[in-house]
Image (cartoon, rainbow, N blue to C red):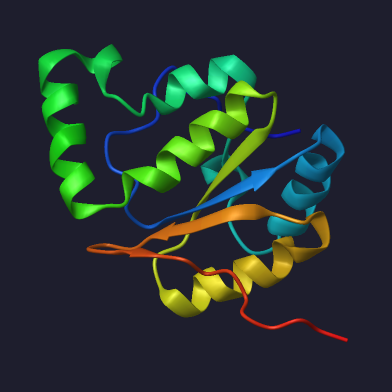
Length: 139
């Protein structure tokens, strides 16, 4: 499994699709499917308690500047979704952070991930947060 687990996720989530997955098998399948759409080295996988610490929703691990930056991001972005991601990680789940610069690319990635039942889908665009969850049920 070619993944990157960083000590801390970069300060800004901009231009990334966040997707929660439940099992390690789902992560392996999703990464294999994503490999033909994005550079696998650019996909981050966070898992469990260690992943929750790397996500650093509060900014505490980054000191005063990190807390300040998270406070500003809370105004600009929806902190509720990051808290949902943190909660899922703390319960043993997995979070994929997939680079996605444009809306059409994000929608395509959501389609690619759909066989692995991603949830908590959030696309952090450059200046906004978008819920890319498909609003339809296929027959």
